[in-house]
Image (tube, rainbow, N blue to C red; front, side):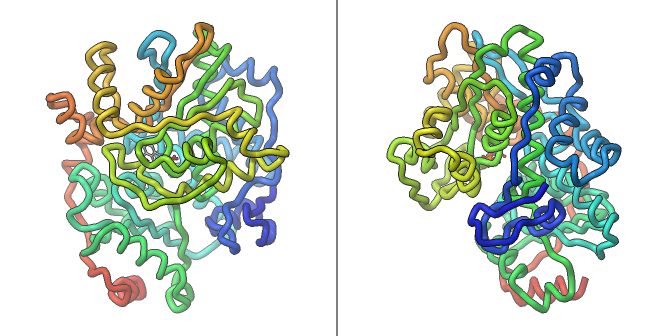
Length: 437
Ligand SMILES: *Cc1c(COP(=O)(O)O)cnc(C)c1O
């Protein structure tokens, strides 16, 4: 399979190139040249298959030309060391729990897959060490650091703003050791991101070491997310609930929903999708007006979705470019909802009290969108619960006036010893540090 850029100005890339480079030379996002389809028989049979088998079928369709089957199965198996259960929350409304991975957020799936795929290419091609630079405001750093932990041939540098991430988030990437180095930057998130960008553009640094990025624009991070859409379908099919499926995805950079749209294009019978947003609602605006106008992001209590210019919008537009009127085609399949912090808090409270289910602020948007969309009797609503509520303990405790329990997995991180390197926000310091490695 070859990969083209959404900007159409860069040459076609191999999977290896697309994964190692991340972004195409023309600053577009890589897309597979074709989206393979799975037969109705294959999809109907998924109810009889394990998550691992389902994921292998999907992975084979995308990556089968580029990786031998045994290796691909090994990568998939290693990635999915945890389950993604579907749980009933309300009448005809189900939660797809994506928080059972090592860092308790859905990003574990993409980060673990990408790490293993990159590790495979490094070994196969005998590449010298690849260095992953990732700037984080909290969640991405933990998923990437843990996903890449112990993968031979890769070193990860996590840049985070000193004093600006929660203690729970900080311990998820500062206590790991091995091939993970946490860099505590005396600045804010934008300073961290600027340092990473400057590093990618610096010739001397790039001659000294091989640098790459692991954010959601990477095809190896977003495509594997389609695995759990199929797995959710299989689970609902077993319950006789998969007939008319409406899927609601809490969205920020729109990587997760794009993976769902890929699954749909491959043949997954989803009736329609909902993009659930917090107050950062440029996508909803696009649905309503046909115009896409990026804006600076606004801080909300669902902070992993505080994105004012979702990078995967380019992929969605490209996917629907095959229709004469892409905007109309997008509107026919996807609707949008926006929620304020007050609405999110109200939803968390109501669902906790009335259904006994603890939502996180992101999943709450997904759930509430299904309620407001008023499903037909035959329809089943499925929302993606993208992180464990304990990751947002401060917010959730305040809303519910409780002291929610921190899962053992998260506690274990908190017992490790913090190790980080303190650096100023000056690029010269960061560069000198990297050159000395
Ligand atoms: C990253 C993230 C999102 C947004 O996912 P996108 O793929 O960027 O749309 C939603 N919820 C949580 C908890 C996240 O960490």
